Image 1 (cartoon, rainbow over the protein chains, first blue to last red):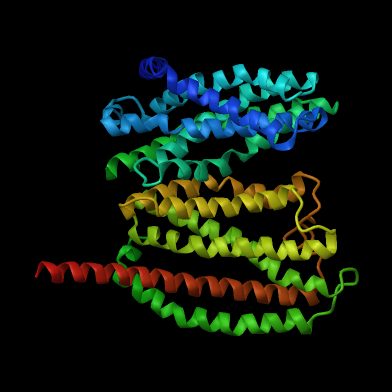
Image 2: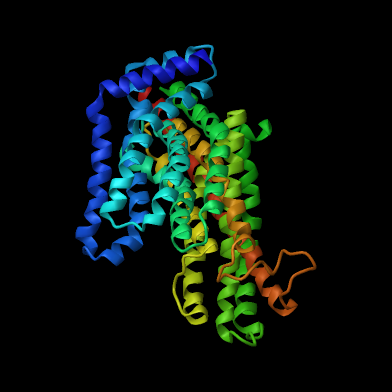
Length: 223
Length: 239
């Protein structure tokens, strides 16, 4: 537990001191989402129809962009070896790092999502389910992303590879995240979709750190 | 398990299996094709386009089976540090990717006359598409490292994580209302397909499986020989 808190505090402090990196992810998110009105035209009905999907897809891509921060710097300067040597289980450390990743990328994305929803003319009924779905869904992105980031440590083509590995795994998050908004707007109720997202998170929370820790061990052994 | 970790012994065993699997695929595939294209009746609703099934369904079965083989070898490689299992997993991946692509393409060709569309975003089709991306991600990941062992280990972890997709594919037609028809062969109360159509289907499936084993053996053998050659060359260079 103390290891979890220590790693979390360290990663948060590091993340906040590199504030520009965090801002970059959020700016990418906003910019990419606002490309769509230019791409498909500013017609309100069309935008309202695709708003939830656009917000989710761009959030997914923004999260992918930020994944290299998760382990890469620690891997390069050797502090990951030190963390792996500590008596705390590696999975706990991974969980702490994924939590820090979510606090520094997931939460800011959620914070600006309503503004994007407004600009993309999202139906007023869709805001609450969008935010709730993102609140449950983005931690899954950080957890699955941790697996991908650990697997690709030391690979030759890091950036695109991480997306290729992680995106198929997080597709359910996208499907049910968008589904929640659509269902609420059409009057069916977002609850079933939110429950599935919750189930995904409940499964990923214990399992993903284990898989990521296994992948990290492989990366550190062969380094 | 450890008996097969010796590459030389493994090579001997697979070389002994090779003629049998090659013979089986050479016998079953033409026979299955004959039954499928000529020797079986057309469907009372679908007419002759039902014959696409005899390629589509075995390809889909193989897509799932090869992924299971890959994940199982990956698990063996991780748990027992089994070098040959790593090779088998890597050699299986491109074959599985081709089976998956074949399943998607034949399904699309079948969907156009039957459903009136090449593609629908329903659960079965989408989850098989994800399977294709999992295969491609695995292949990209395995080849992305300078150290081949590191690539194989990372790939093994990814293959195990991606295993969650297999039950989703299998049960997608039961969990969601989809355009794709539900299971009609492996179901309680026996298959709902006529025996006349089951015969070519199973012959083709056997042929596909034998073909997979044959190609897998050839690929594993080539890789083993390549490594042997590399070691010999290194030894020669060092004099």
